Image (cartoon, rainbow, N blue to C red; front, side):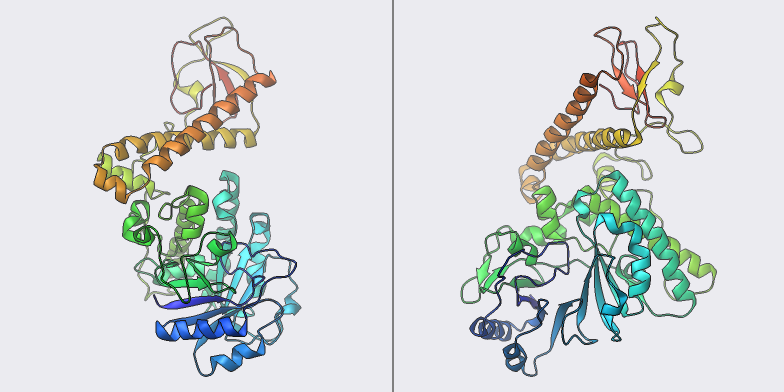
Length: 460
């Protein structure tokens, strides 16, 4: 343990993926509790990370700190903020005048999904007031495929803007893109391993997110610390993360628990976003090298997967590298998926052996069922791998029960989607034994003859 995050105020801004607690009368840390915090930190040789609210820091805090070094997180507009404070900015609609004339060493920029379109411009404005910007995409574990595409589009714009600044000789950092340039090993958050959080009441938690969500404390300033299944906080107990070299990913255990109920299992959205960030770093660095810029930084190797679950499955099943562990539709030489209608000829009316168009779905409906379909395939492919593990491996990899629950929920959602569409009466079916499938390429709903199953499409 190296540091202690001190929440001086329950209304203090979030500098990560959690949301601050909304309260009409937020609790502030008392002088007596802060004295116990300092004694605990001194006893355990911990550095201090102070998180203050919008009303600033009580005078007794500065008096009690004395000459101790510390880092302080302050919200935009906080009184008395200086360049050594980490400025926390929420959203993209803030007024640049609120930033003042101080240029901070580090700034945290939290952006929700609905602010992704404005993110590049907001970063451009903020970069004039901070040398390093740490980007936090809030609610990332709740993104759908469309949200991830919007995030990738924002990364494309951001890497182009950042590259232009590097070519002009500006020494700026944007965490999700620039960090991967220098990292040769993972840079995890380290909650519960490198740091703990203390609340205004003196309770210890893994991180502020667990405290804000009302999770039981893992200890107190005066008592023993007890973290259940503490070994799961370590990276070597996270099989998916162990196969990944998106080193800039913070591997947030709070978001893991919120999304998958497991400390060591990230949601798929986080993995996809981390690899999109890695690819943005790789492409930007390759472009800069062609312009003889940042040549001292070694190249980032390309990957043949977009999710670390793929190489994990490749190791377990002996699947050759470059082949996705999740089944996918056949592709043409150009890379676009082959539609079911191209795999076999369509028949005309009354022909039971061919496929005929029964209707269409919107792109949004197509994305919804495609995401469920892909997720069902991936979970189904992973279950046999875990089922073959011995009991010792399963105990150290507590994924099996979670996968069973996920698969059940995914299949239920998949079946409910088809049932809802069938009930809507939008598509025709001539006989009960006929089934529908969707061409993900064209959004066509195709009616088959009930005698075969075509690969590469979701089916009723």
